[in-house]
Length: 398
Image (cartoon, rainbow, N blue to C red):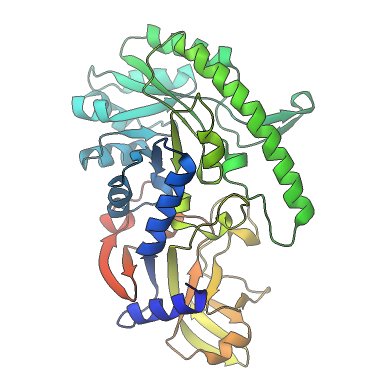
């Protein structure tokens, strides 16, 4: 369906609602889920909750065959999800939440449902000091995935785990296994420089080719090192519950590695604007928000209420929401996206009236839900449900 036709549907579906508001197009959401499964090639997909931040939508996608488990982002969130019935939650980021570690180690059901990422013995010390009971903590070891060039003088990739070599990962596995109250159950390795960086940037052919060359080299290097790391850890812990890797932008490549048993993905469900620039797949925009036209300052310009919802990461234009519908609107370069009001320029502005909706796409996925209490779920040209975001359930974890 074309973007103008989508605008007609969204306007019709929300005609009885005042903006600001946020929607999820269920047909696009479900199509994106199916595309993730197709690219995973039969390997299960673990859903990254930070990219969704809505319990009802997590439940919707996990009800599909092929999706299994949640990749969470804080310990408090992990325990909440477990108490809500999610029985396989992997906390993907180390935590220093002593209070919640006390809860985790004092509750057998929580300890069975949640595993936590560890990459430093100091994290084990913190957990031991916070223990509220004797339950065994299920541990996932994280491997650094960054690409090192020129003898390590150039690093490409996120600064995450300090564990880079198979020997380092195996050494921590031995330390965990020797320590009472801990058990290694899995390995995680997130290649953000492949999964989270588009390789087909519009109007930037040289940059796009450079990214593709970098990512090709990174995939080859990581596949060999990840396989060796898994072998080294299995020599210490023969039975691992999972080896997790990938992300929305690298699903098909990571799934091809025999050492990986499951894929992580989440942003591809909403398809925010930063995920438009990949040569290997094309998702459908599923999550949008609308701001109302509040002023018409002159020809070729309207002003909408609010709209200054930048995404996290290195500051730049690519972190701003995209004025999406009607097509042809752009920011005033001297004002950008404003906290309270946002002027938008372009010939399309002349066809907008006071109270009309302008539809935006957020730069990243789940961060949109930190701005709205409710998501309206749209099927065709109707709102078929209203579901709370994490924020709407009173859960602001970060």
